[in-house]
Image (cartoon, rainbow, N blue to C red; front, side):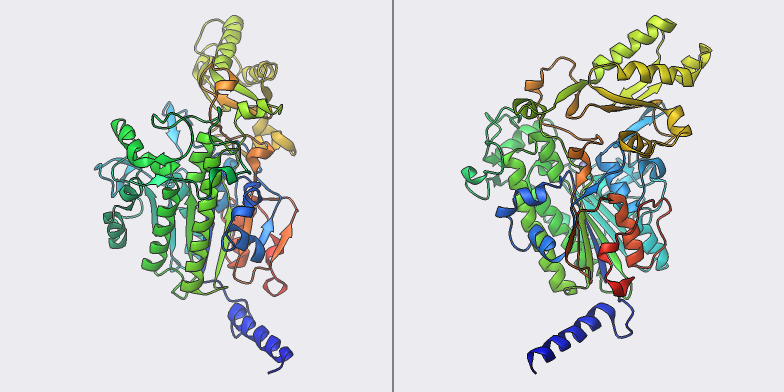
Length: 563
Ligand SMILES: [Zn+2]
């Protein structure tokens, strides 16, 4: 066969693989959704010179890279992020307005996946109250896959965090597993919402006590510390020293650290600040694919994998740290391992994969200040005091504020009603008062958010994050670079670690890569949103849009024959 003949034959072969015999596009055997918790867009390329060829670099080299992917709501936290990726919707519709929120009816803070009607399956603590997706108000793409196949498609979701596994799995997942890091010896668990007992393969995996073995190892950097020129020095003032260590630097001897943590009963939480946590999850995910026969049936299956260690290490040490860089270099190897496994198990082109993040993160406040960048600390306790003084002076001493945390203020509506005051007026007065305080950029009232359409910028993002049943009376945005701190007096130079949650670039700009199943190689700088992922998958798999889906399919990933 001459060269042209070979190329023609290859095209025909590729056509058969991708589109089957009939000429209609063949559906992928498996959808693989990867969320890297707290991954900023810049981390995809910042560490590139030390990445392997088969991980993040391969996804960019062979797949499609949407460089300008952003979140379109506030707050940019883990639970809303995972919910939005998989529902194609925003907190205003899917109802996951935070990692937790104040429940006016029950007068207490409620966790995003908390469910007291179910219990944890497989925990060493019997009848520990459990978790489920019941707070999620719309369907996910995983639900639509189940519905669309008359429940023949299988959906499995895994993470170290409960919310990282439960929300992507939707309401109808076959199996959802996370690690019980609060209980020794760090087993994968589930909820009675899904099952009465763990499958044998999960029990067998747990019995190997891999988490325990991992925590007897020492974490050293992959390369000499001096080679980490992409990060700040290893020992610096922006990071806390963990577990009684004299400095926040390598090596991390988990075997000795765990003894300290054991005294506090938090030994297995060390998995969340160890590269072992990501390794454990990759091993568990491949076991899930093998034992659940994912991608082996006639219908498309789905697995969601959410890597949590990047988030906890990012919070603890900040995005400038050698610790976080090393976590990414090692995660890159996990991604490579996962891709190689999928290639070997299902075959190249037989699965479609996306990789994104639930939010980014801001550099440590003191680091920003040191480098003359805009920064500050929002002290909720001080704001609370200022609000209370203002309202007490104006209307008399009463408990006007029912709850205030993060960026939401819940007014005491019964006190306002008893005082014969107008709720809308008080909301607006409070919003006007708040924008006059240092560090607060904007404040919108629930009344206005329900009655007006905000179409641009932070106001639009606050509106997309506002759910009338669950949100507060006043929603806040702090100034760019400002992070919250519970301590009212700690100077900025002593605030260690960092956080996220805002509508600013550092928190809302995340990676989005697509790979496999005929998706062309390419790059786009068009502004797209993480809410575009679920509707794209709906088009790709010929499924109905999830119930709250508001995103748009990403044209770029559809070759002409798929349109
Ligand atoms: Zn997160």
